[in-house]
Amino acid sequence: MTGTVAAVDLGATSGRVVLGHVGAGELRIEPLARFANAPVRTPDGLHWSVLELYRGVVEGLAAAVRAEPELASIGIDSWAVDYGLLREGRLLGNPYSYRDERTAAAVQRVHARVSPAELYARNGLQHLPFTTLFQLDADRDAGALTLADRMLLLPDLLAHWLTGAAVAERTNASTTGLVGVASGEWDAELAARVELPAGILPPLVDAGTALGGLLPTASRGIGATAAVVTAVGSHDTASAVVAVPAADAEVAYISCGTWSLVGVELERPVLGEASRLAGFTNEGGVDGRVRYLHNVMGLWLLSECIRDWERDGERIDLAPLLAAASAVSIPVPVFDADDPGFLSPGGMPERIGAWLAAHDLPVPASRAELVRSILESLAAAYARAIRTASELSGLRVRAVHLVGGGSNNELLCRLTADATGLPVFAGPDEATAIGNVLVQARALGLMSGSLESLRSLVARAFPPRTYLPR
Image 1 (cartoon, helix red, strand yellow):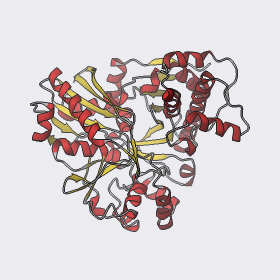
Image 2 (tube, rainbow, N blue to C red):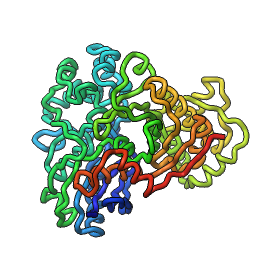
Image 3 (cartoon, helix red, strand yellow):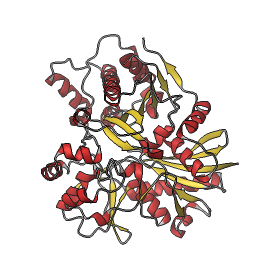
Image 4 (cartoon, helix red, strand yellow):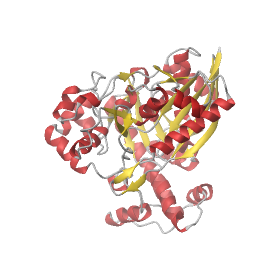
């Protein structure tokens, strides 16, 4: 039996709708639509244009139905931690972007009630100042929670507009800081201690749960279809990890895009002070797996430099820029790609230069040298994270799988192999959409089996490219 599903994959810079044609031994994808996504700064902060995002989703799904009228299912994934607040189903305002600076005071307030060590013991998460827990505290302090009766993470909000279901898929909920790392359920005691109304937290569902058919409002925009919406690994990294084409468990993965998520897949979380101080997080994976990983700033560093260079009207072509960076023969400085000073948008070349100068390192003299410096710094960060993940988890890592858009960056793949001393297997670049498709297909009965069998299918359908360390 074969069928077709639609994967809606939303990133912090763009969204896409991809058709997946699936069945026993069959896996093909067909990208159909892509639309821009960027936060907008207003006087009260940095927000997502979520209605424009929803418009892109609906128009992309309409294209999917035109291409495949018998579309069986729709699944949505996105970046983590950001959410919308609702009252009686109505959105109360545009969701904030995690890059907004409003959470600094919230972090201090939360840590005054619950220490960082206790938080880690409860939720297993790497400290990030934009985690949902801190964002909700900022909303509470601003009075925004007095009207809200529900919080929905972004993929769940869009699914709510499509189906009416108001739930939280577990892999994404695990990034909020409010899910117990041991229980996998909302930590109501923690919510009470930080004075968050527990009633705003929606019921949790597993990846593979059918959320329902399309509401009439959604059907009008998408077209007549009997498709259901299926919860997938709605945190994009959870979907990407499903599609890592690994032959065994002794591998590390790098899901490389705006962020780079570097880690290993485990059966049980790794807690304790050494793990917390190393900045490692235990996030939920599909089928109850644990994504033990470290967040690295990722290709955001490069895309922000390009955005700055293009502000005066110049058009930057990435391919020649990477070719020039590859040809750089002189040593370039390596900086800390994890430095939180690189989190906010704007002025990235100057901020990298300032970091280097402050650490008595030479500032690159050309764009090509700066790009090479960025990529070598990312590769060094990947190598540190993989070594630490192996040491803390006890998992011997024999190879690295680099998936996502960054897998098309040959220079980055080569530098990562050199920095880690391990073979790097690059691809698929659409890993997130493929993992989204696979979870839907398995839920519909179009295929069956464990994550390992799904990954074997990915490896056959999308053979990775190999980079050996020099």
